[in-house]
Amino acid sequence: MMRGGRWVVLCAAAVLTLAGCGRDGVGERPDFAGAQELPEELAEDGVTILVGDPDATTRVRLYEDPRCPYCGDFETTGGASELQEAMLARQARTEYTLASFLDDRVGGIGSKKAVNALRAALEQGKFVEYHEVLYANQPEESVDGFTDACLLDLADQVEGLRGSAFDSAVKTMKYRSFVSASQKAYESAGGKSEPEGPGTPTVVINGKRIPLEYNGLLYDGDTFARLLLDIHKYPEQWKLTVLDPSVQ
Image 1 (spheres, rainbow, N blue to C red):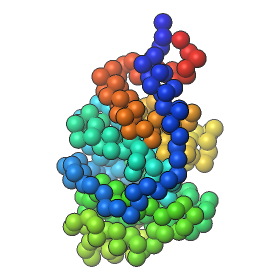
Image 2: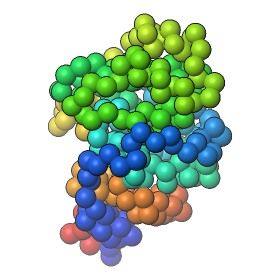
Image 3: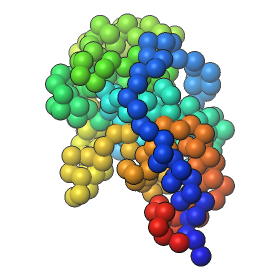
């Protein structure tokens, strides 16, 4: 008997999708259709940002770094729009863990500043919209482009976000402790085998991580949408799935 065959086939096909680093569409203002409808809040752990219906049965844990180009691909041309559709349909809820390791890896402080600004946007109830804006205007990974001036300028694209509270939080790094705690949470998620963290983007659905070899499905919107829908319909089968095409 095939264990989790539905997802083995789906994921195996997705491996053929290449995770490119193109910046197609960067600089454009995103379409916020439906984004304002999604509830957002800080979890009790103080580091996880929760978006979507609290009663949704599919829980998508998403690890991202604002400077990561692969995260940018997922958010702008990959499966992020399908994930948002699943959230709007109240089928899925997303749990964001925001990393900032790329600052140390490539230099600068842009990831930390962006994570701080995203936390400030959450305080204003504007995390989802601002998150979309940042990825739609993501600088090249090697460029430390998320400066205070850039982050404030991009905030102008989100109606009602700019104000003394948000502007001050960005300029003073008000949520510095959140940035550090979120990075530590990301590192802890890697366990002993990945002490520096699981990599970004990493997706864990209902406690089961999509392995690196299947990460291609994150960049194919149709494939990712089918995966989310199948998991929503057959959650128990997903728990038993072995994401290995050699397992029958």
